[in-house]
Image 1 (cartoon, helix red, strand yellow):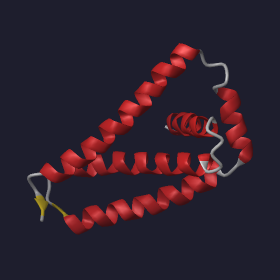
Image 2 (cartoon, rainbow, N blue to C red; image 1 turned 180 degrees about the horizontal axis):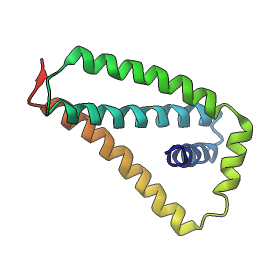
Image 3 (cartoon, rainbow, N blue to C red; image 1 turned 120 degrees about the horizontal axis):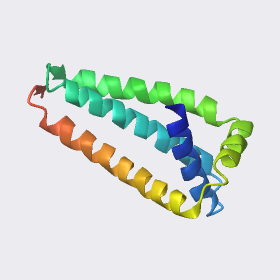
Length: 128
């Protein structure tokens, strides 16, 4: 699974680097953290269809996972050697494959975000 998030990180990092943005690594870390949190929140929202989940649990879960993933990913992606290794790993990727995977990443981000909104708001057991 790390390979999946590493790929997303490096694609976002390289895209922001193309604009000579000095915050490209930070931006990529934040987007990967939020993607992970939204995926887990979608799972919790799906579970809320089976069992009652309080709003405070949902918010607490989101906050705790955000903090944990932020510290773990900040530690992982702060290593310049890792970033260089990831760039080297996917440097030879064909242009068409890179474009298709780029669209897939954007679609994944949109799907996870909308899933988070729709599932979280429409759960029949989500206590107000």
